Amino acid sequence: MLMYWTDNIWICYSAYVIFIILYNVVITITQFQLAIGLTTESFALVFGVNTFAAVLLNAVLTVILIDKAVLGLDVRTQFIVYSVYFGIVACVFLIHSAYNLYQKFCQQKQTSDSTSATGDKDKQENVEPLMEATM
Image 1 (tube, rainbow, N blue to C red):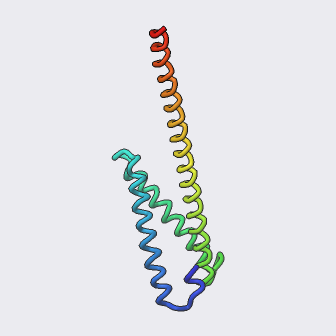
Image 2 (tube, rainbow, N blue to C red):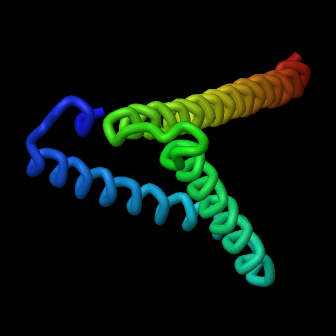
Image 3 (cartoon, helix red, strand yellow):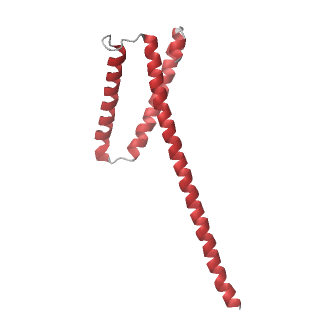
């Protein structure tokens, strides 16, 4: 969105460089996390399909937004469309991450509740034989 609002080319270049750096860092982390759960035999298939889908989506968006026969949007409007697109993708990932964190929190809470409940039960079982022995 910054590139839509400014006419200064240096601000545009700086924002673009920062965006590309952040994008590549996030992509690297994402691919690393994806690779953790894969077997060695499926690396090429998963990353190949992922790259193909990304290139296909990029080509479709380019044809729709730039080609005069379809929408033929000017540069500033393209910046808005791509900003909204990346914003939606970011929101989807943030919601997914929040959901995963919530699930982990609930699982940890259930685990701690169940261990404390069994721990109390064990204590009661240990106390009862002592009470019977003293009587």
